[in-house]
Length: 225
Length: 121
Image (cartoon, rainbow over all chains, first blue to last red; front, side, top):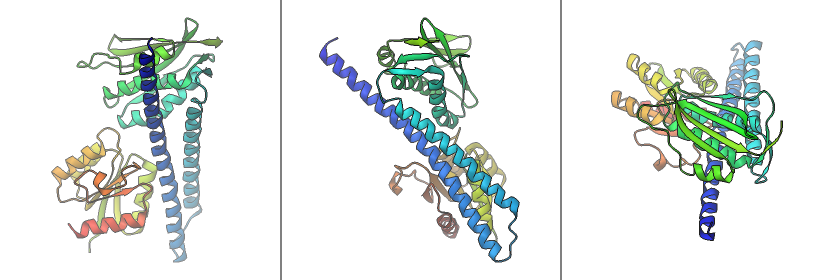
């Protein structure tokens, strides 16, 4: 590969990685904003009820319990988002390291849930029974998976499901991403997919199977079973 | 003066249900729905003074919902709500809305905007 081509490849990877990082953080910040909004309105409602009680309006134990439960639930939801975002952010700490494929797929699909939800699409995940540890680039792998999911979402309709399943194959991991095929749309390879898969030293097959579009991603680097 | 009736549309059920309670505490009758499609349908069956609409909705987007409501009920003012941090200026907001509010919403400001929207109808 010439130096010019290598520089261009690095530039594309850098720019697309930054865009991916931005898409995930924007999505999580929207979710956290919703959590804070609910806690804020619940605190406001509590204030309304207390103000009413000062003027003799009844304030019951049940009302207080319901509001406390609401705040507790939203706090838990917020903590989940922060944990997922933190795990995601740390996946960029080192270019190559050991990671567990099921956990990585679970985190990435959970972070993509909002995007899917806006389209009315459900993301389903199937895992291996045993942990599947790989040594590869976890950040680029998530970027690759997100690129495929995002591409499938653009052609999905309300109430569709996208299934992401993890398995072991050829001393590596296999991730199969399947969505319903639409009559008008042939399966395609989104921009930069090849570059990302090459960077993972993996391979990707895109095709149709029954009434579905199927992306089969093979990632080398199995550590141990 | 008859009671104000507001339709709130946002897919965060816990948020809109709490807003409904708080608005009703302020003598504003409020109904919440979770999707744009449900809002469009309900508007065909019932009259509301103001619609408060989130920009990001599952299925039919907030923008598309606003377009349909404005076409079918041009007299009903729409207040948009958004969690999009970069939509900080009025000129960034889609045309056709009476006003917009960033999330988290200040309820007293929302009440003020609802009353202003009804006053200029």
